[in-house]
Image (cartoon, rainbow, N blue to C red; front, side, top):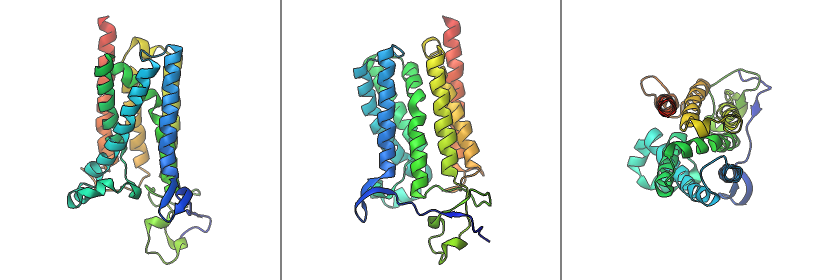
Length: 275
């Protein structure tokens, strides 16, 4: 029986609507805010002498990051979660108005952008990765809030007092109040993967010398922490694709992030010891 107190999600995904399916969406606005915030912070790093990159180099990196997140996130969504749908209709990639982005795919795209910038600007990959890691969760914070506003990527069925009824979780229901309420897992992710990790990375960047003295360490710590946070959040999130080895895909892919993070940390230690 659905608790009477459960809030029914009716939030319109459009901030401003010009037609039935065209307007300014909160999801698109979240991407803009994430990119603008990241660019502002990295330019501030350059002005304060906290990075080896100049303001112009930061601008070049941002172009690559935007392309990496958008292209990588879109490809990752289908390759990692819905490959059957992509195989049946490759043109679905271009139906961006229907949503569909994956963090792990976007991360791969950002890694390529970092590699390209490092090669072109003759700056170490580890240093740029540290800088990007310090701002990455800002985009996640806005993105997860936008996921909640969109009423997508909802959590598992729950009876907690703050559970939310997501009508899209049962579109055939005749009475939305009969739809089981669920964890607002998007907000859990906004807090853990977004706000908490952003605060941690900013503290490490500004209050320690880790970026200057141990290149790659901050990136490793971030990847490891994100992987753990994502796995915790997956406990409350409804799997949106078939399981792999009994694990949700978000959990499975995050294990590789944790392993990669540990490798970055170990390599940074070797660099410091060899100096």
